[in-house]
Amino acid sequence: HIKTHKMAEIIQIQLQLGILKFKCATLAEAELLAQSAAVDVLLAMQPVSVHLGNFTHLIETYPKTKFSTLIDNDQSLTEFKEVALAKNLIIDVWLDINNGMNRTGIKPDKAAETLYKSIHREPLLNLKGLHVYDGHIHTSDPDERAFECDTDFKPVIELKTALESEGYPVPTIVAGGTPTFPIHKKRKRVELSPGT
Image 1 (cartoon, rainbow, N blue to C red):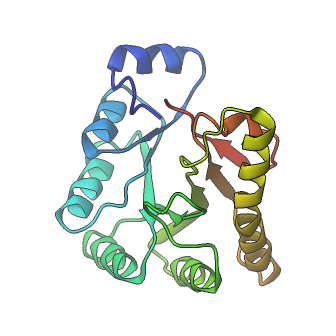
Image 2 (cartoon, helix red, strand yellow):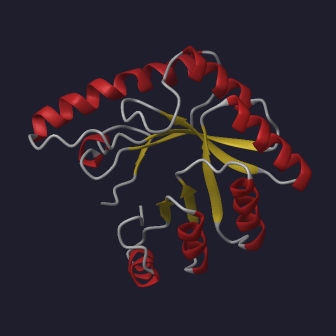
């Protein structure tokens, strides 16, 4: 996540070290990443209204960068469908899960399962998996932090299992921030997003 440095020079160093996937919080950061030749960019704030149009403009303007973003509600799903259809554009999306941060995302329950299935059925939306930011977990004791992280992540695993048992693939989970990435790195098919 480039939220801390926001600098092309550091992006270049990261690219040289083999980091190809980046996360960002704003459209300006997403554009900076594309201008810096980042291969994969996840905009981790769900674009709505005019911002969705600006996001799709980035997809069209920088075809060498693979952009993706988040959805966490039915209204946004409708907006994404309409924009994708109007522009004849495939948009990569993640279902944004709230596992305790209570800032964005949908709780990993039946409503999330239903929304995931609805997104999956849309031909112009490419559902990449689940996005889970647990920035609320920053306990200094590593054992306590691991326990809290695992406890809060359990419903996410249950959601993934329920979806896959019904034939809905969950290819990847993007999870964690800086305090929790050492815990999430032990999980299979989980990508990390430290950045503080």
